Image (cartoon, rainbow, N blue to C red):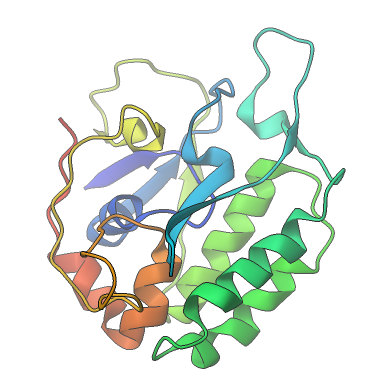
Length: 207
């Protein structure tokens, strides 16, 4: 199975499950950038509930800016904020110390292009999972492809499809009910090496 997806910022469980269950990953490279998507955001769990981490971007005056051309804004120190948020939320998780040193360089490196940064984040995640990240990029935009498993709808925040994933123990399970489909970071810090088995066993709803 070949899956067609958008590379997103520390993808959620649905994105990652599709990637690990696919034989080939094909990333959309020819789409236009849209607001309210996971291209520049991810959701984690903290003591007070859900927290959305957003990467600020420089919006072009052009009407149809390509995703691959979107530049990241550094008007605010978002990398430092994101890292501190992860430390606050997950420092007591079972596998935080095991993975955080691999992730830290992403929050200190110079970031300019959003698309390239998301790919870099994915490469680190796959390294943490001890899996190869083999992917190709689309050569043109096909609105209604029948060649691939089209999972591009998973990129939308407000139109996110209803997902029902198996519970795992989260850091604040004593305060909050289980929340599924958070960023892969939540699953990784809580489940560690079991992350791969978990992702391969989940059913993703694309309807």
